[in-house]
Picture 1 (cartoon, rainbow, N blue to C red):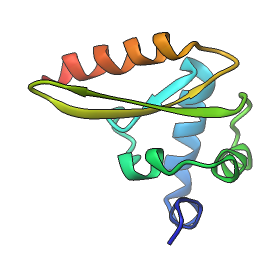
Picture 2 (picture 1 turned 90 degrees about the vertical axis):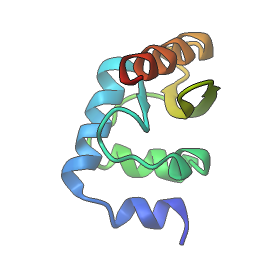
Picture 3 (picture 1 turned 45 degrees about the vertical axis):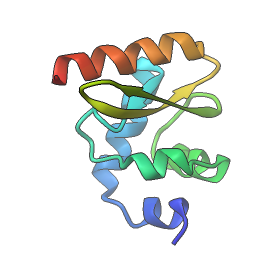
Picture 4 (picture 1 turned 60 degrees about the horizontal axis):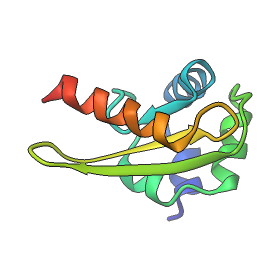
Length: 101
């Protein structure tokens, strides 16, 4: 199955929460507690962003970002490139992971 197929079979409430989080913060991670799998983030497409728009996402195109952190593992995220720079999104991921260490 494609990421879009998985996403379209995902819980609608979770999709809305992810869309709302992205609109509020401009970034969402696989560590934010929504159950968004890192593999979906890695294989994200414009079609997936379009699907989020059906459930309230109002932001721009989404880019993927990831980082391996020693003692923690890999952290992945999606960020709105119209709202945040990659460096800012990466800082968000690192801070989120450090709170979970």
